[in-house]
Amino acid sequence: MNETQEKVTALAESIAAQHGVRLFDVEIAGSAQSPLIRVYIDKDNGITLDECANFSRSLAALFDVEDPIPSAYVLEVSSPGLDRKLKKLRHFELSIGKQARVVLKKQPEGQGVFTGTIMEVRGDTIILLTGDEKEVLIPFDAISKARLEMKL
Image (cartoon, rainbow, N blue to C red):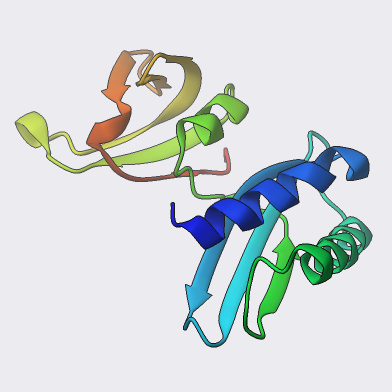
């Protein structure tokens, strides 16, 4: 995480509790002259559009005071969605009991994709229970990409 992203994350974290939400992720895209700041917030029962708008106004006001971005920027605040990407160990911890699809960087014995319920995060290992009731231990650093999936 670069310095700007760390500042933005810290500022967003500082107001998340005031709004009754938790910060899920912060992404910064675009150029240094015109960055796009995406802030994803979440809570147990989901996020409403009004909550995103209120959080966005509060965060923009805090940015005006703290000035973490020296140039003009675009701020987007939204929910991470039902099929959210899982990029951090914390994301897996927040998703225990939910269905996920995990793609590995290396594909041992031809098995490079696992779908199952996130049962536990133990240290740096994610434990999935697959559809055939097998427990799969996946080291976090072996994951190429992961996201939640809707159960059908």
